[in-house]
Amino acid sequence: MRNYEAVFVFRPEDEIYNRGKQLVQDEFSKAGVSVVKEDDMGSRELAYKVKNEDRGHYFCYEAKIEPEKITELTAAIRLMDPVLKCLFVRQ
Image (cartoon, rainbow, N blue to C red; front, side, top):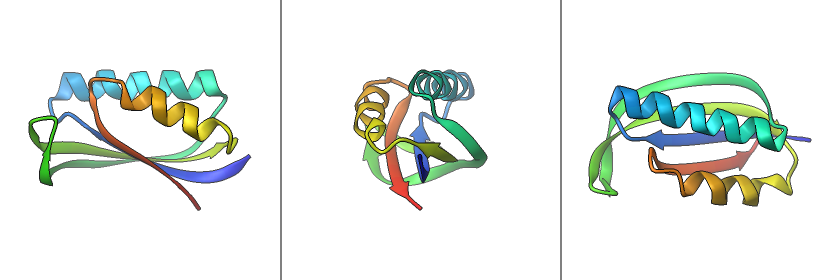
């Protein structure tokens, strides 16, 4: 397992943000991801509109993930409606 930082931008509404965060955590548990640290970065204005949204709620995870699971996780998470953007970066 390698250390990764995963940043997600969710829709800014509280209930949608909470649902999206729960969906991501469920996907992580299916893939066997162990979360080391969570950081709620709050709601911010986006540089450009994404899915007709000009604000987003940022959330960052530090996690241990098998490298072959990254593509699978990215594909599954990008299809979730509450998620505007996601990015996995190896630490």
